[in-house]
Image (cartoon, rainbow, N blue to C red; front, side, top):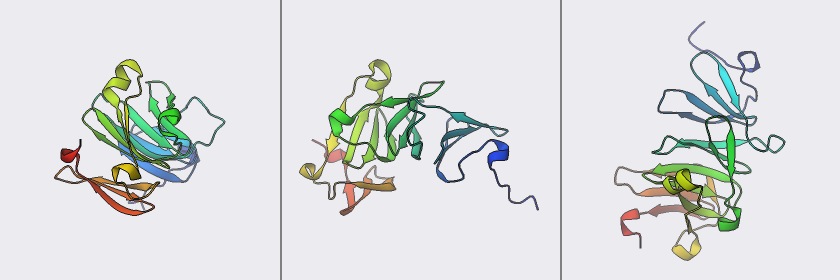
Length: 178
């Protein structure tokens, strides 16, 4: 029966636990697994290495910004793909978070849900200069809950953002942003 095709170690996809699937602007599938990131070009799987191969490789989410940069959210932080490997983005001193639960690109920003609420990163600024221009949204700004939930984020047709947190559902209207 060829209606269903299963992929595994034999085809080059190690780590059976696939947690994220993303199709980039070139039609390649990016897979986030418990063994890291794999890219499928329609014929074969390639494993993308990152700066800390000895750390936990669990990937939770994958996205792409307007500059075509691929962003990866993991159990140990935020990464971007530099064309060869994954490179860590150290946002811990700005936000004090390490688990990335969701990523939503919006123009020059990417919304990042973490174990320490939600923040935005100016990706255009970061892609040009590696400068960390972030806005952090916490209980002080009205976010209910301290931690976001895995892949619990959505942008609706009115450009409102919906976030699932440990404190419940939050809707954010960027048009009313200060």
